[in-house]
Length: 95
Image (cartoon, rainbow, N blue to C red; front, top):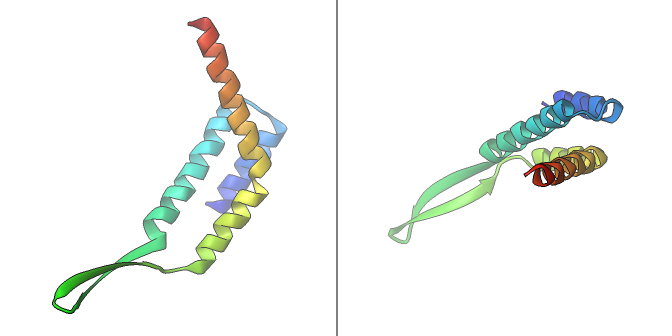
């Protein structure tokens, strides 16, 4: 997933097209969804006659990797956001 994000980010740097922005954002969303689905585990225990539910972090390295990715891709994320902002303004002008 990270290779796809990096490749899409590099592609976005070279050619700032709407299609490249969409592709880049989709890869970021896919990665973040994966992390959210797999990063935490809910643990249920019985204690003191009641059910205890805990959310446990299962992998600190995923958090480190996510931070590194976001730091590395910060400029591309800003570019993608600006392109979307401009597109929204153009659509508002059209309407």
